[in-house]
Length: 505
Image 1 (cartoon, rainbow, N blue to C red):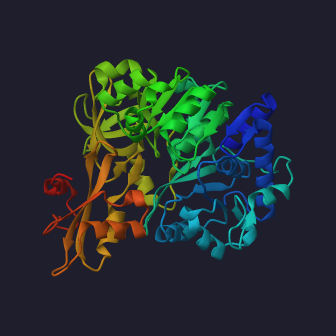
Image 2 (spheres, rainbow, N blue to C red):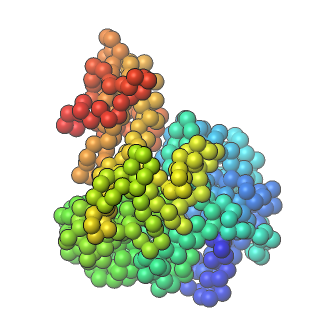
Image 3 (cartoon, rainbow, N blue to C red):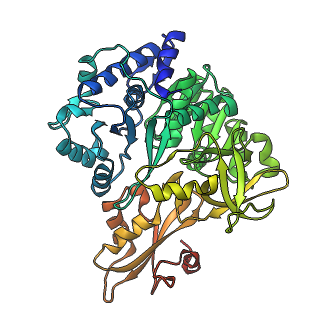
């Protein structure tokens, strides 16, 4: 099983059926198959071979999807880059992953990446979606028109790597989650098994395709032969009008989108009766928000507890909200769940432990990071880094994170990266970053900063400094000055004691 096989199969079964629709174009399954063949053959002509990493930086548009499937057809490995990365972050990622080619949408957010890859790569290997803005690169449509539409002469094994999902951008060691074709096919089939999705689904995707929640949903629906409507970013009115006009049956959202919809004054003007499935990922809804969404938009709200590393783990169904809203639901069909104590043994129901799973949806490891891979698969179980407990009915409660990761607006943020930037400021002596509860973001980033003696800086200037070196969503939402930071005997930040320093954000 491999991802690329889905397109010739669907092109044979229903060639004229719409596959992808964005604001620029509508593509049926036959044309999608042929266009991805052309891109795949173009890359082969440029010397790209199976196993090569190809970078991808694009917003939500049809070409983003085409690039993923084209790479799948020739056994090349897709590495989607975050278009919000700063020049510093982009440089670190290019240095680390060493892509052999790049598919690029040139816009203001991707200027840094564009400059770097154009310096590094042969112009024929930098494929610009709307033509290169300033020298270097080959236009996307020009590349397609120069290549043959026949099936690429490459055999792709299901165990080959399909995708590297980059979950953190840092000047240190990034986390690149490796997914094989078979694992991603299983994630796609899970849409059919756990979500009753099939070829009749009409899905609306507004989550960024550069992150796995949006990308995984999109590929999963196309794999089954459904139709996907893509919007570049979430807008309440555009979202609701598309649901009504296109009779959308399936969508995915993060909690911040749900909050925005419930605050939107025009919500009740739109009909959303076609929605059979609203999936929630990237955080847990409060009982009030969940019930509000079910009353005002659709009763079919399913909350998933999932991660890039493990895929979907549990789901809280609409029927469970009334009695189990404080949980994340029960394990899905293919997940074996275990709560592990500090001694490595399973803890009994009701006791807290680290959430560990066995599942065909998990990644195969971390790119160039054997230590993290060994830790993740320790003892034959995949370790999520989250803490929780199971109740007597098998519902899982997540109590917190064993690791320091902050999840804000559905996006994973790592404190160490922000701390490194803050410590680089000439007036900062030390810094620590922690997440705090936020009604809007689920969690938000707060920095605790120790100033150097005689320093004259304010929170706003330091937050601006962070935004100059990091994607803006990683910058602290709040910053507080403290006299000192708690540290362990080994000199590391004692993150367990940081919370005691927090005042109201």
